Length: 584
Image 1 (cartoon, one colour):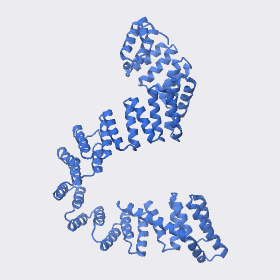
Image 2 (spheres, rainbow, N blue to C red; image 1 turned 135 degrees about the vertical axis):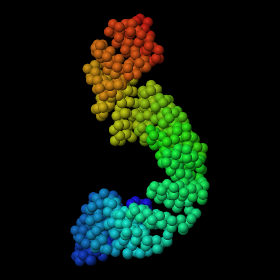
Image 3 (tube, rainbow, N blue to C red; image 1 turned 120 degrees about the vertical axis):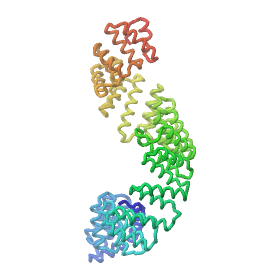
Image 4 (cartoon, rainbow, N blue to C red; image 1 turned 90 degrees about the vertical axis):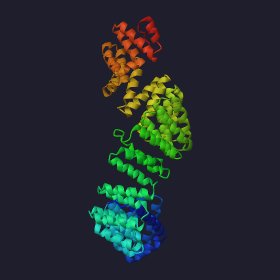
């Protein structure tokens, strides 16, 4: 069974152990002397032990772990019964993840110094991390026997026994704890879970009813009882206790969402909607609860429980009731993105940034949306603002470089990439993107040699970067250079993406430049069938191929169609006017 407070107590223990470590450093010299006496070693060995131990602590404090391990090991050679050296070594091994060595050292240290609680606390933690719950529980039992006033030890003993499924022993420990602190919900719930795990429903129910008898006006206890009945598939009693909560506290957010989930499980959409709507409209319900419920409710868009209109209403209620929390607007933005309303989503994120300008993730999300909208002026402007706040974020430099390329600011694109390069570190995917952008910028600046060198680098780093292969091949074909390499690169891109109209167009155009017009037509027609008929450049290329095959009337029709798309070469009008292909 899971015990909710184990983590809390571990934190307390770590804090205590940390304090102990500080105390131990102060007293280390005295302890070393005392233990060396016990080992009956010579005076010279005593002095060497003390010096070595202190030096080991010093190396550990400055982070030189290997030196510290060697020195503590030397201490154990001088005095094989030094529990202090064992403890310090165990802490280092534990911190390095070597729990086996740490536990062996601690077991020996405890055998030598059975009263030292810090040794037992660390060993209990190691056992717990290794899911050796019974052994960990035994350590806390020993600690409790040494210090019966420390009820934390008794609680940890009970909780770990429960995790070890030693239910009888766990109940015995919880009952002893209850005698000392009185009835409380933490202990009663733990006991109820144990009884339920053992199939003792009557005893489990009694623990919860004991809580209600203690405080009949506490809504949470009725919620625990309702959950118990639900787990036992007793829907009638579960509903009865949920309603009892509403009777005590009509605005209780917990029960509103519990009832919404209850009716959702029953498939009663109308009732579920009634309570979830009340829950979202309740200003006393924490916004975290609302957001978590919304995310759970919309996690599977393929199987929606509520209609789009209902979800939209809940989002609007969330904004109206909790508009002072920026997370609400991020939720709304994600909702709008799902609906394909990218521009509206971006405006929501802009609103968030008015009060949360230091939130990097919001900036990045907004820039990505602008990129998807192909609003490159906004990407350019907003990336600049974001870089003032986050100058070490390489993604921002990449996004600004893309905007520069689209806005034909090619020299600036190169400068941006150079400025962002020191922040790439080991981010290989982003390094590849930077190199690809550099290739594009250099080509547009007619720095062909540098551009092609960058394309080669990209393909070397990422042999499956088909975008780089396609663009590289296309630029080679435009320049009528190394067409064999162009065909090889473009062919690889097409083979991996046989339905990509852009890649098919490039391959057809390389074949065109190689004067293989019939094969070029074959691939171009596939491109046209895969959406290329909406792209003016592809349609114009199709006309060029048809002309070279002697299909002049058909070529003229395609050129005219390309002109109608508004996307074509500077020679297109002249081609139509003269009725022939014009070589660029």
